[in-house]
Amino acid sequence: MKIKISDNQKKLLASIAAGLLGNLLAYLSSLLTPMQPQVTFDFSHIATFAVAVAFGPFYGLLTGAIGAIYPYYEFAVLGIYGPWYGLAIILGKAMTGYFCGLLRYRLPTFLAVTVSYIPECIYTQLFLLSMSFALPAGAMTWAIATGILMEGWVEVIIFSFIIEMVVRRRIMETAVLMLEIFIIMLLVHKEFILSLLLLLLITFIVMVLFEMLKPLFKDRHPGHTPDGEDSL
Image (cartoon, rainbow, N blue to C red; front, side, top):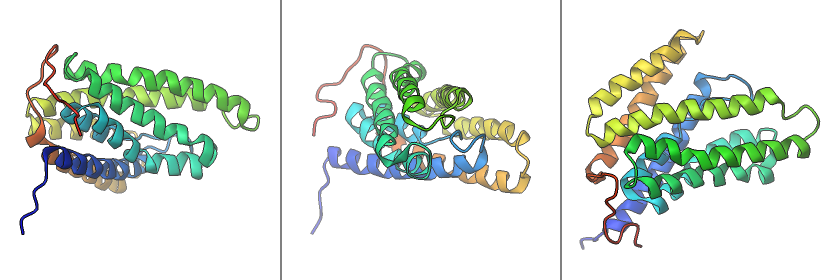
């Protein structure tokens, strides 16, 4: 008996799979750049942006929320925020996926990705401000808060160009761009062999993600919104 899967079910399954890959990317990237216990690079939003641009706001929200599971565990359950306050991490990442999906036809891809992070950035600032009062004195410092926000914007700007190249079907150019970015990161990292292996593994996982979503990307340009998008 042949099982028929609708387009929306395919999108749902792809979004869940991308979210799981996002967790793996978050884990691997956190090993690369441990700047502070609460500040590391987090590449999970690559999956969030890719799905949001390909499928729209609902699926971007879903992937963002799923991709936030490991960051939530690392920075909340094991970190200073605790499991209750740390739920804000999941909400923030889901928020970015939703806004990126809303902007995908209204702005060029690289701008849609970049602008969609603004609500999460403001939300994160408010969250960190509240944590400075809720947590014990000295737990949330200005250095930690600044590091989190700067790291977030560096990632998003890089991701915006990566997703733009993927949308234009330039998969190999994207791979080269990612390797160049990772090599720069490698130059400031001490453990050469471990870093190199992690960089190659991250690049491979991202390419798997993009190849999985590539057939589902549609031609997009500002001002065009197809009928029935995100219907379930």
